[in-house]
Image (cartoon, rainbow, N blue to C red):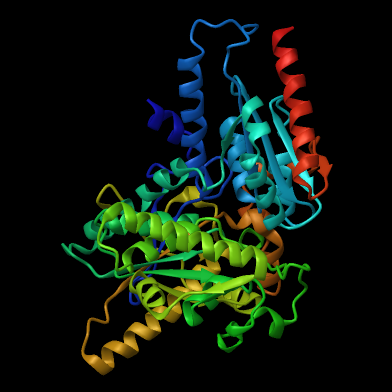
Length: 489
């Protein structure tokens, strides 16, 4: 019932359909944007919202609204755009839940902001924070670490620090693999996943899938110009501002693109404008554990935790840290990385639009016409959002590298590349129009979902907030108290 309730809201029958962009290159696109907010976050957050409600209903059974023992959740989250709207749509109107979503003021797309701020349900609160996504994320972490806040409010997370988010996202990696097996007729096709990466949650779900037995050849991290993860895989240094990482392709200093004081640049892919990826901490623990020489399991776990703490303390104090060759080698066993600039992103949107439309998708083992519900087709052409374009750019580079390697070594050149399409292009109209403005006959309105028409003109509710966790704490307390009092009146 939870599963049906969570995914009956999706527009595509297969929930996350797979589309083949180029049969000759074995290039596939896993469309993850068919949920209520047109982004991949819906896959996890529709489920998480219903999960919260399920447990609250069970725990509050038989308790009147005025009962002081009635449980009330205070959900806090940070968003660079998509998590916020997906969380709000998953939790709006839920009993005994207050939702607080922080986004960096002026640094999300107009559609993303409108999706969040036009939801006027009494339990939904949007905070526009003066700062970056990393500032918003730091506030969330500080609230969870505050004993006083936790003693008076039942805090709950919607960001991917919540394990339930990762759990739900694991499913579509397996679904994509089984779809590929059905389509190719091969019992064991060679394949890679390419994931546009910001906070590392989506690709971390892919990593857990491989640990559960998914036989992926590689997981490829596709970053934008905020390339801290790419620099780590090339150099072994994880640094907010590149020092040792200057020899890696690109780099924040050399690009000269507008950046915040922290070093975060504003790009055409705002959902990936992140420097400190929360879920990377999870991978670091596994890498430290795998490379440890300690044999006793509990001691090995403790040592891995101590290493991660040392690294993160250095990140906070010095702005970065480095790992040894063994850990970097372990990281490269499962992962590779690519860095994609804004210019390259725009070019890929143009190139894919200029190619023929994908002719088929896999539905329960049968090949059929590409889904009409995608809203990503225009006069026989496919339109990528900029984040998905970063994934496709990285995919094409990997395909070229695999082909060249096979020619030299005699290996298998027919490696399938499954790139994750994380959002509908209508959520990032500026980038799409920038790419296709000179294409004859293209009009963005023809691919604009009806749900977005007039959205930005609707009434909005949003509070401005400083980048101070203490100030945000005060705002949260005040608004939760008002909600609870209104419920008891």
